[in-house]
View 1 (cartoon, helix red, strand yellow):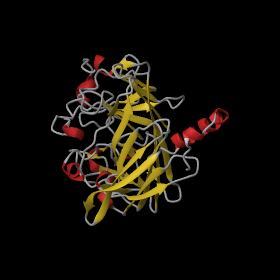
View 2 (cartoon, helix red, strand yellow):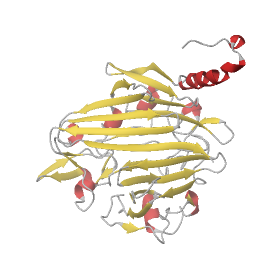
View 3 (cartoon, one colour):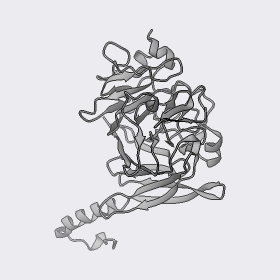
View 4 (cartoon, helix red, strand yellow):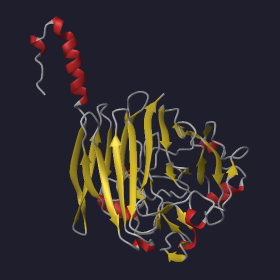
Length: 377
């Protein structure tokens, strides 16, 4: 774009200047690609996307992972609010799920087994006695292909694709998976999924980002205020597998239909909190109005609004974090220092026919969209 010489602009040109400046602001949206490392001869990249508000997210094709998400607080001070590592080597030896896309089946499958059309499939046990997030070699641990999508008048998107071979981690069917990230000028992180198969299989895909609105590594999330538009949740047994019950949240510490401080009831004498060591449960979304969930942290003023077309969301508040992981800037991710809102179908659905189906059939692609909008108040 040709830049204007301000010394040559006369007063009648003020309106033209204003329009030009707006155009320049829009053109400040930038994307940068750099090498992050290599796995088995395949290039791993780090992609930075900065919107016209000057806020940046970073992604990598290792696990189609959200690495960094920087937004301002109510005073304009910017901070990264999601868990991540500074190097690929740290991802390979650290927590396998920070910000990654998990599949082929997110969450838990009881006993690592399910039956489909009379055939029993056995999966790898990586969360004894269950399979968790697709198994140890799930989609969080593979290198995805990258495509940059640019459409006139829209923010660019990054599309990650991965072809999961038949019987990978024990799951039938070759599945072609897509995860598309868009970072908008309105500070919305839009994640869209599309998956298709050549043989009947099961599928549950989500993103496993951790958030702390103080800033990642800056204390716990127990003072965050949470609303989840869910009238029911799925209670679990001692192995964190849903019992099949859809229990009303009313009258329980799981009632977030009106905003509550996360830490206020987390130590309540309630069986489900003892079993989950806190909140680590699937909430049955009402899906009647927006937003589906809201997180607010009063000190910073930061807000997350989450909307999804999925029937459930796993609210997890970092009960298994132990302070051994160091992220960006050497910050330590302590116990309950991050929360997850993993949009999903229900855990163990392949073994619970009463739950919404997770069966994926040839010719009937699965599509889904989740939006996390960041703001302040």
